[in-house]
Structures are given as C-alpha cells and as structure tokens.
Image (cartoon, rainbow, N blue to C red; front, side, top):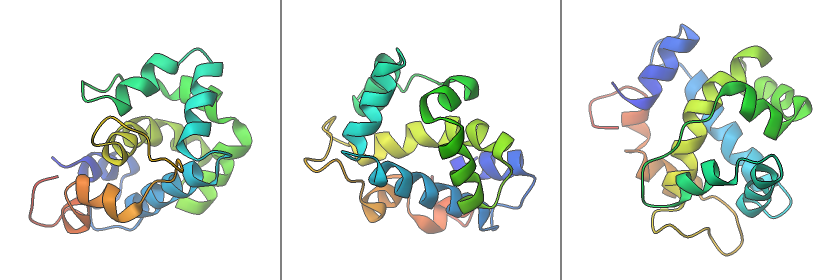
Length: 143
C-alpha cells in the first residue's frame, strides 16, 4: 500500500481523491513559509525537545515516528488550522495525517542527509523521491 493509499484510507477517501495531494502540497508550502524554511521547522522541533525525531527524518537511517499530539505541539494550533483549511480536512485530522506524511516529505527532501542551503523544499524533488505523483495518487507504480 502506498503512503497516500494509507492516508486516503484514514481520510475515508479514495486514493484518487485530491485530499492527499492537497495535504502534501500544504505541508510543502508550510515548511517553505517557515522563517528559514526547513531549518526553521527543525529549530521548532528542537525547541520542543524533538530535535532527535526531525533529525532522523533528515538522516539516511530509519525515520522516527511522531505522535499527532507532539506534532500539534510543535506546529501550534494556528498552523494546524491553516493546514486543515488548505488541505480541505478537519483540524483534528491534520496532525494525525501529517504525523504520517511529514517524515516522508522531509526525508524525500533531504536524500543525502543534507538540508537544502536555502531550507526550501522542492515539490518536484519531493514527489519524485516519493515515487512520482501518479504512484502517490494510487495509480500503478511503487510508492
């Protein structure tokens, strides 16, 4: 099952639905709009005592999971509400979904274990690393 198939089942939507793509797009935009981009998000994780979690997503090792409540604590209620609105899902669903998506997005954006110099995530690079947009949307292919 692909990442977005899993997310789609959590949302109760088919993998062909746009909700998953919207959430990934919203997550990419959110990271890029942080002061410092990914570096700013990393700092937020460190300030909340979760630097080791986000570091695992950047490194070439296994991604550590993050609990939805912990992610909500890092992002804050205002950001969670904004992401929910952009993705078209309920605010109480966002952190659960993002806790599964964000580790993969950050990991895909840092394939060599290095944060981009400007801290900005490239959507094309991320989607390509996640197996391509068609695979992410549940079409034939490996995600």
